[in-house]
Length: 253
Image (cartoon, rainbow, N blue to C red; front, side, top):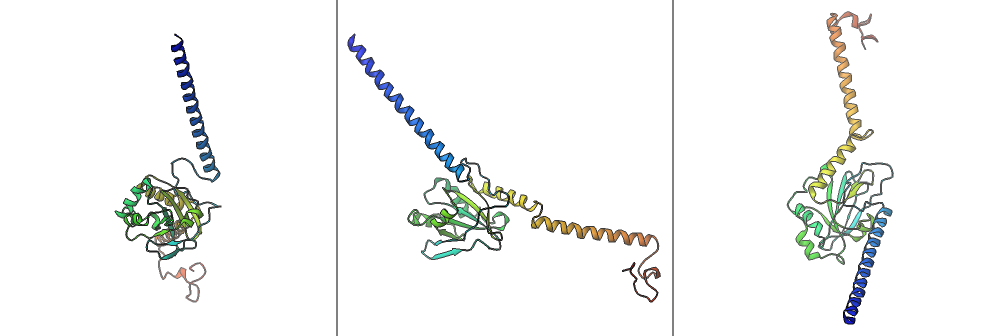
């Protein structure tokens, strides 16, 4: 009987230690998750997987930086983004990122040809100290520039890959950034954002449409005036359109 009591006591002690260990592990996990979420919020990024690429342009956008680094052949290169005549989509990818596989395939298969909005595409990886150049040679697509630049990751505050940053050259600012599950999602988000930007009051596209509408309205008014004059029997060369000396008077002008 005493032996059974001793065994039960030992089992209860072991069970208590196991439960205590699990509780400590659970508390540590919650603490780390809370810390990561707080860091993400403090950095201004959404800790969740939902992407907002890109947000509509607004005042106080992040500053854009040029990207300098090396190619897979070791050549030093620099891509001018700030002040460029058009937008640039930076694709931050990695050779050891499982989530990047679908994007590498999309780039090699030509699915990313013709970025919405006419933006040029630039793939950015970290330096050779963090990447496998031989693996990148297998992954890198033809016809799309790839630059190895840890500095660019730091300047654009990229915490992980895949990550995308849309840079507006003329304004030298970041128009939007985020992550996505696949290239079709990135393309769809870009199209939506470009459409929103073009229809925003004060945008260049909106101003062009307003100018077109103004020209169209003036032509309509002129055609209506010609029709009313024709109905009254007044056409080109009618005496009422000219002054006493045969020149068009102020009314005719």
